[in-house]
Length: 272
Image 1 (cartoon, one colour):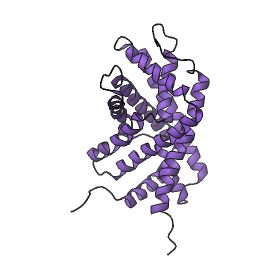
Image 2 (cartoon, helix red, strand yellow):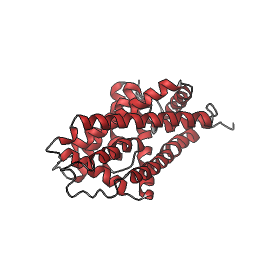
Image 3 (cartoon, rainbow, N blue to C red):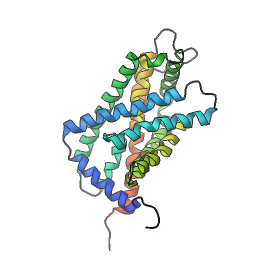
Image 4 (tube, one colour):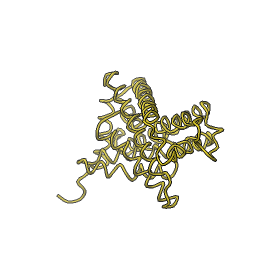
């Protein structure tokens, strides 16, 4: 055998479409539970990334890249352990474009998974709070978590939207590459670079923000937290604005820039 052992791009496109059909026809309870798991997995990646990025003396870029590598834990768990992530499921548009899944069924699937992701992310917020995780390094971890959340809610709507486009283009490309891998090692190594890139560059991921911002909200009024961090934008309104912008941007980045583009290249009906 010569060349790469991975599936070809055309084969990946077919696999992604087939998986999209299967996901659309899955039962509601299973989809919701897997959505909860995915939200929790992404949140655990965010917990790890926050810790890695705390008190680093390695410099801005390297620190953010290492935090991105740590955050990759979340998507690795989603892909390898099995879960349903809203942003990755944007690739289901390939099945819709091929007329194998109805738009209504796609939107139903997205809604169930989105709500499940939210529940899973919030469950990790609660557990991290009760575990006192935020008190590590003399509360520096909590201060970092607070700064991350405040920084996200301070961004203008347009900034969040375009950062979210870039974020989910990279997330869906990570899923795409992992689908092309034939072994566990292939999948893990395929996931890390795109995810590390999106985190290092400060792009916006709606499901990750379901953890990051609520974590900041619960820490906001904690005595001894924050220091010089400006938390004026860290409100429920700021959270809602960020979530709307990041969700819409994620759909554009994942469904259109990855899903529809690859459908057009590899799966559109031939006129021959």
